[in-house]
Image: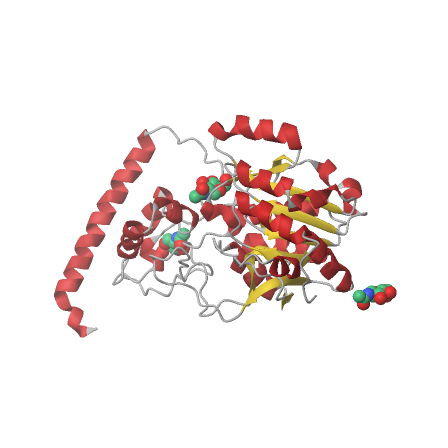
Length: 383
Ligand SMILES: *[C@@H]1O[C@H](CO)[C@@H](O)[C@H](O)[C@H]1NC(C)=O
Ligand SMILES: *[C@@H]1O[C@H](CO)[C@@H](O)[C@H](O)[C@H]1NC(C)=O
Ligand SMILES: *[C@@H]1O[C@H](CO)[C@@H](O)[C@H](O)[C@H]1NC(C)=O
């Protein structure tokens, strides 16, 4: 501590003077400038450096580090760095050298909660996709997809998605809100098939969690009486008959998520990783057990509690960790490993296809190959 010495103090008071000057300028500007237009949604993260962080580790440095290492889109959905003139002006005038922990608020203001990002509702809800609110269905399959993936959706419709012709199975694609340039094509596609549910949060990779929430919201609003929901993606092959068999042999189960359950997974703390998670988003050392995102099955009594718990949690881009792990654990839901949820690419032997429930990383043409192998009546498989 003593090593900081007079130089540090000097620099610190110098910095304080500068910030005070800047604050004064901001104040003057704010007086003169017309009021800014109201923000559509309240910005949550108000980074108030002075009273949250100890002066010896200025927040600005860490944020600069983050900003230089990760793309803006990642910052957007993780930590919002929005200067908020009002607050900083008020607080710079307070002694910045005050004890750092004295004013620590209950929640770190840099944490972005899920409710600050999620936009509820659907542009195109298609309630008719779930007749009688799901009372006669055994299974609802919701396939998350991106606006530009029309080819992948076609492959699903022409292959395993066919099972939605059954009266006890319903299927829809769930998309986020598209860019304006995609709208016309999506409207045309939906006019043909009527199976696109479009949410109100913008569709992007870092918004995947929001898409899953949009999916849960749709199931809760338009299909609340269905007993089981399969969440899957448009690059998956789903063996629907096998899945229906699984559903009927596990029928009296409540508050459960089945899939490929990963245990003791560690958050990636290096910012270069595609799966980077900051300690603000997830402070723990180990993720709770979670079912991987490509496909998981839920009892529908899990849907409402998940939707209710999500808004108050720090936003996490890893939708599977967030929904099935963080929320699943918080709500005390069972997460059960089922080996038939391969959720990975497999050597497409007909028996592997016939024995599995979910195969990942399937491209357009591969859907037809897997579909043929599923329905291959010739190969003798053990079970
Ligand atoms: C700003 O500083 C004042 C005075 O020290 C303090 O009472 C207040 O809680 C701070 N504002 C915020 C938003 O923390
Ligand atoms: C995520 O969705 C929200 C709500 O629509 C939007 O404001 C935000 O820009 C999106 N983020 C990204 C990175 O696309
Ligand atoms: C589920 O419960 C019903 C009614 O209690 C019972 O008839 C049925 O056998 C049970 N199914 C399974 C798979 O245990």
